[in-house]
Length: 159
Image 1 (cartoon, rainbow, N blue to C red):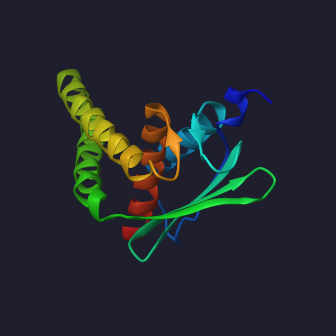
Image 2 (cartoon, one colour; image 1 turned 90 degrees about the vertical axis):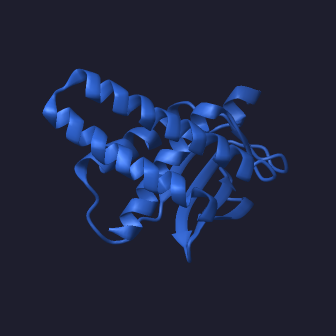
Image 3 (tube, rainbow, N blue to C red; image 1 turned 45 degrees about the horizontal axis):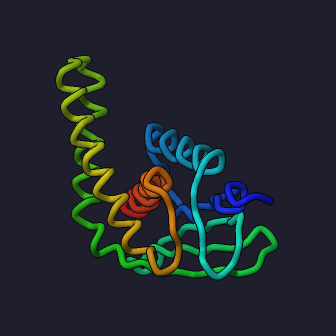
């Protein structure tokens, strides 16, 4: 197995709380999971991949449970959501504004809001990479997609 094939995520499981997420959020979540499985760069230094990832929220902590494909527990990393609170709040507001703008059809407004949304998403991806750097290494696109899943978990848990 070559390095590119090993250092990736092959399965992502979200421990979603009961409740109905919006159709848009479910679509974003589905696309992020599909894209992560199709193309990700993710590596845990102590155990070679590929990896399966279970994401959950427990007591205001985001839990990354990383397993090798042979079911060997690779790493469990509980991550405080406190540093992400402002970003998650801002991201939700901007995403709500973006959906509202899409309904209005005003292209310049859609583009402006989308730029802000991408900026917040990028900030969150860098924070995620920094916060997980002792456990896992990932590329920027993988971190962006993982933040989409974190937002889905967080929003489902607060609805």
